[in-house]
Length: 355
Ligand code: SF4
Image (tube, rainbow, N blue to C red):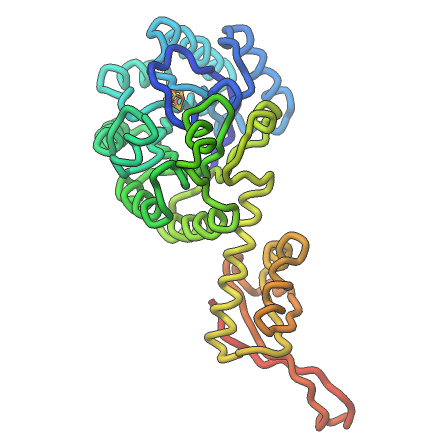
């Protein structure tokens, strides 16, 4: 079930690590510790908007490693959050943290204060990639924490990064496979963005790290979306939010304000190619049909899919067909028929294969 979040940012508080990519203050765009009053105001604003389904909403403490902050501060934030959960009959509290900052004692506390979902920043399941990016935990920590969370009946979210220093598309796909084996309820995928004042910035400057190009990143993440969708794992976020401070501090890496849209378009492009291939159509005038809600994704930003198909020899029209499921694509040849009953030119389409 999809839940909505009332986000409360917890900054880079007391985190003893210095991950290669992290400039937490710039990424979250916030620098202060939220007070009980601010938490109450954030919830009140969300509730009074009238758009909130309270029973399906969680207060989400995002931005830092929640269970690694000072214990009394963590309990005080949880206590303020839980008060709001009970007052407004919300579903619960969502937190994000590091895999090595979860143990049975912490889970006891989290459960006592109404935590219903935990997201773990796994980032990679390759120990060498984790080491190179100074994560300070291993892949086994991700496995152990995930198991403990699931055994407690808490919803598990996992976060992974693509294109980290020392990683490759193949390693990132392997990470996805290992994470899927942990049965997460949700996934977030973040292509690596290089921020000022980070270790990655130094590696970029020295030429030791070349971030993945946007095109390659889009291709990889389109593959990851397919991969998780086929396993009924909901990818609730793909790509970083465009916070002003992030934009100011970004030096490189795979960022685009509509990154997920690019990936969705790439998936439709690949599906169209498969449908054309299955229909035995190698070029010429073609009609590609999709669900009406998928027309813009099939077309692509600035008609890029239509242009790319033209470069492959297809003169393509895109048609909306409400009989088609969202991820289905049909391809058919468009023919010019001069022998029809009217004796005039008549356009016909032959039903092609779906993919
Ligand atoms: S553990 Fe999280 S907060 Fe700490 S440095 Fe790494 S990414 Fe930043």
